[in-house]
Length: 70
Image 1 (cartoon, rainbow, N blue to C red):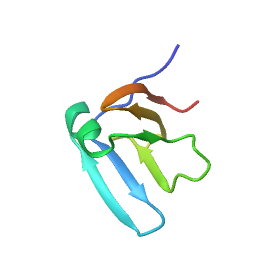
Image 2 (spheres, helix red, strand yellow):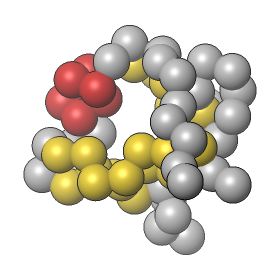
Image 3 (cartoon, rainbow, N blue to C red):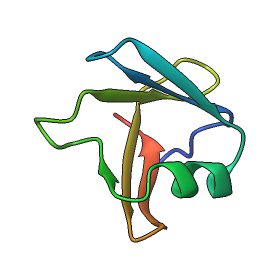
Image 4 (cartoon, helix red, strand yellow):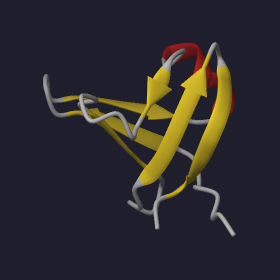
């Protein structure tokens, strides 16, 4: 059973030390239109409001996976 993350979600880019907060799913998909947190080349780490790592996959503005990493 997957555990849903609690908003706001925090996206931190370790490459340029940039951080962005997303209050809801709409903000998330509009900014990260194509995103896969499991991609080895991805420099963005996503956590929820409790600091838990989030597994996130977005394709063409649709959330495919959004759950707490276990």
